[in-house]
Length: 115
Image (cartoon, rainbow, N blue to C red):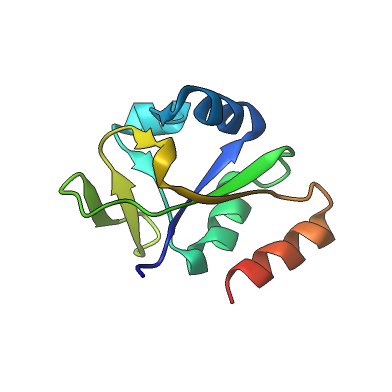
């Protein structure tokens, strides 16, 4: 089984994705022209860099079928991240977990996810 990819979402984004069955991306995703995803070992860094101090976050695990629209590309931090050039499908969701708002609990949850 292939490893899932992850999308960090706000509570509103997750609720809309779950309800509508498609996710066309966050404001940042739409501006950049692709959906920002990450591997399991990148989730904690993404949360720290892009979502520090924000509450009501969810981490969604996705298994995306082989698709030419999924590309691993180098970011500004010189690491390669998965970018998806289309909407995500709700059928690809393996798991969804809310992140604790408490910083210590959040750090523990993210550390356990990376294992």
